[in-house]
Image (cartoon, rainbow, N blue to C red; front, side, top):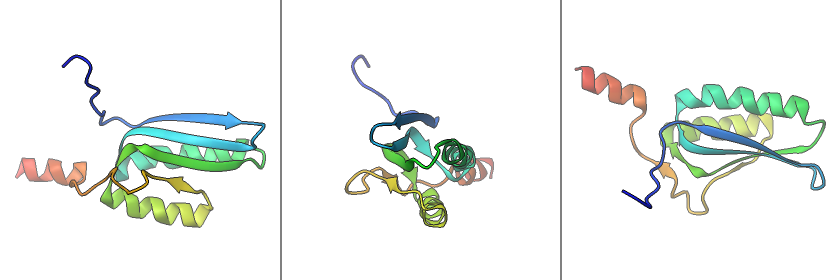
Amino acid sequence: MKGRRLASEKLSVVVRVDVDGEQIQIAATGRVTTSSLKGLFPVVQRTKSLGGGLGIEMDLSQATVDEDALQELKGYAALHAVPVRFAPDLSNVTALPSRSRQTISRAA
């Protein structure tokens, strides 16, 4: 399928530092699941500790976010005062079952 870009299941994270704007953005693409959050949250914490007081924002507008991961993200963002950006209409939030549920249902 030449010219088509397929979304990846793998979470990819880029940390952008804008020293002039005093902002650090953690941008993710791919699929955000409750499992992948275990890798994303330490990146956020490490970035905050190295940021030297710069503002931190998670940009998930280009990622696909599982609905159960969305609840964890909201709780984490509130607890750690880290804003999270999604697609304007939350069109990137899916109601797909998590990977663990998919694996269990296939094994049955």
